[in-house]
Amino acid sequence: MGAMTMWRGQQFERAAVSLRQAYVIVSATVFALGVLDAAEPEGSAARLAGAVQFLSSDDLEGRGVGTDGLDKAADYIASEFAKAGLQTELFDGSPFQVFQEPADAELGPATENTIEFIGPALEGRDEPQRISLEIGSDFHPMALGGTADVQAPLVFAGYGISAKDPQYDDYADIDVKGKVLVLLRKHPGQADKDIAFHTRRGQRHAYFITKVANAFEHGARAVIIVNDAHGVTQTRQNAENARDEEVKKLIARRNAFKKNETPTTDEREQYLNEIDKIIGRIEELEQQLSAGADKILQFGEGGQSSNWKTLPVYFAARAAIEPVVQSALGKSLADLERQIDHEFTPQSQVLEGWDAHCRAMVTHRQVDVKNVLGVLEGEGSLAEETIILGAHYDHLGNGGNGSLAPWTRAIHNGADDNASGTSTLLEVARRLASRPQKSRRRLVFIAFTAEERGLNGSTYYVKNPLVPLENTVAMLNMDMVGRLTDNKLVVYGTGTAVEFDGLIEGLNKRYQFDITKKPTGYGPSDHQSFYKQKIPVFHFYTNTHSDYHRPSDDFDKINVAGMLRIADLVAEIADRIDGADERPAYQDTK
Ligand SMILES: [Zn+2]
Image 1 (tube, rainbow, N blue to C red):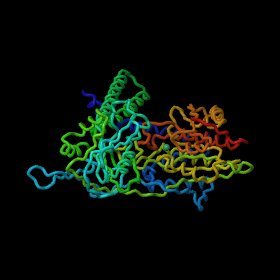
Image 2: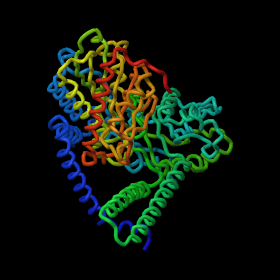
Image 3: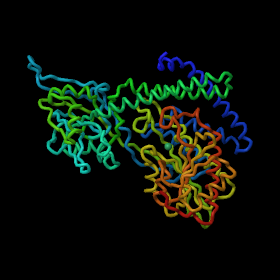
């Protein structure tokens, strides 16, 4: 039996494993609820679970910027803040700090997004020949571009790069003003690792956004990008190699399990879990391979920009461009690429006799987004100092740009990322608000928006702070705290204040997490925005997993009991910082 047939035959095991997983999760949750109700504030486990479940429900549409779901989440957080007793009349009587973000670019109907090549008449014909490309299979408009209807001569402009280091300019000897450009993805000399295009600076020349900007500056009226030959080969090889590795793993795991004649329930459980994961990965790779290695990027996959509102940008299949190149130049795209590589010299040239008629309809809208804030005022001589507790509540919506499964358009529920942190923030707020005495310092709770787009909510906040940043003495952030596994907790920022390492070490004697300390205040979440303002930070994280930024980041995999312990820890850290006479002493980290 071939390896592929073998793993397909295992589908029944997957069904079995899902049922079992569901049972284990349900019983673990019930167990956790039962045990914790005795020790924890009443009902807090159920409340936490309820919050994550609500925030990560399909109803909230993956909390993407521009969705109603994101606004529903904001309303929910605001009402929970108010219920907890936080002050929420902060911005003209509301808890919402509003700013604007570009919504996901919108693609108009297929009839408004077309490419047609018009070339010399074929032998024996009077009419020029026309090649219409099929949207979806031959090309996709890119969200980097804009809206226009243009007909202009076609030019092959190599990689569309103008670089000084290495010295290389695809536009050096050609005027592309008013033309439609065919560009290759990436950069010349990919097999030669010594070329400066491989450095971090050099890589920038290969970015779509750099190429589009460059084409625009040179006066192009439309841009059609195709995969480079080297990339196509790499993609196929990588996917094949990865799949073969997974298949080997599957066989090895299966054979090992067969040797165990009397597996325990746990062993069988673990085996089925592992098999399930491997099969999932194989299926993903198979999907990639069957889609073909000359994969044309989807609408949002190359990023989006509203900088070039009148410049259509497309990603097309090589096979769709090849007939035009062959007809005009008598050679193939691959020939041109080889020539560029071999001589490290641009081969830009007019595709003589060929025009392109390009139509694109891509709309770029701005939408309102909101950070949600709640405040507990302090009392006494330190009341003008502030401690911020935060978590982002947005996620990826239907996927698109930030998704690691971009070929699927499915709701990315983001239960761990970051319904978990948001729900834990609410729980911490309830605990700190229900203490009998007031805090010494002001506590500001912030649920940030647009984090997934590059920390935009927290960046906006530090530029427009509710209370002065000079008196903001610490920021505690939670992002992905819902998958506590083997008791492992990652804590960033332990070096950002003189006191922080000792503080976490001391408290953990009681909490007994298996903590990985990261001294740095930098990292891919909102704490970084505050650390850049020289504010000491903590960031809590239960580490990444195979569902990260995928539609499968769902509620059923959340460890509610773990979140409760993290809520306790974070509330206690806030309490300790608040209780100290001196504010934490900031330290530089890398
Ligand atoms: Zn996140």
